[in-house]
Length: 228
Image (cartoon, one colour):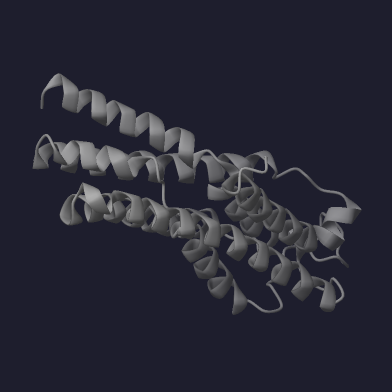
């Protein structure tokens, strides 16, 4: 690979790190993994699944321009922006439904790792409705995963003008960097909030998590429409 190709790969890595550190890529997983007491393994697996979907969608959009020709670039970018906007709406909907589900149940769940009626040093008890955990995790993985990185689309196209090896190098570097950064940010956030406990969080932690996820989606929408 020549210097131009290496520069493109370096640009891809930097782009992936900066883009993935945006809170809508990892904060929802931190919040839900805390409220539903996911294991470290489950947190990693769900976040990795979402990151891989994110990579596939982003690279696929770049390859779509390569296959369809540069003239289709604007249409592909417009489609990508539409997916990004849809992700904001879906995060808002997910967060509000998550919050409403908790509030309608009257707070009788294991918010932030403990039951509202149990003291912090009580033994851990299983969730009252463990069946909803897989659904929540997969739904969140799909919502976040289908939010493409628009910035990598022209990079893929540029790599295609060099060689197939450059395209492959860009795709692999984007995939590895995105997965590592997304999982790392999620685990760091989860560890950083591990000691956040209070009577309020104990009782309303899940509702608060839903509200924060909805606000994250709202922020995505406001950025998309250049309102902030």
